[in-house]
Image 1 (tube, rainbow, N blue to C red):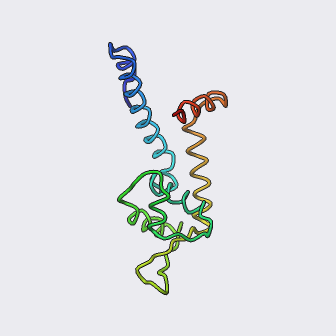
Image 2: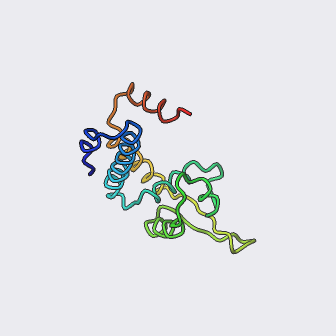
Image 3: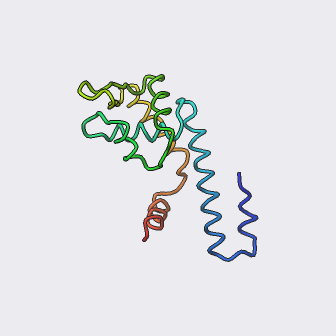
Length: 143
């Protein structure tokens, strides 16, 4: 992990310190989240896909729909979907009318794993009071 004291105690301008500390924090959070969901045999991209599928109105999405609804732009969606299918978290079906279209559906096991993994990520990475969470949210959404 980053030695934040080097940044904090540096002679850098405040803006540079803020940007660098934000980058360090983002890297640390991504690392922590990755470690926290490892026992579910998931990557962060796979968890994001499970989240998108769990929010799907019609319960079935195409690969392109999943890509459009993801927060991060990832070139590994197809590979991640294959891994999710191997773990029986999703099922894939070809559209009967157009075989080029692959439809993805969350399985009951995938829904359970998504909830469990999300709870683990939230529980172990957001170690703030309710007031601090609200303050951080307000700062992060400030435009």
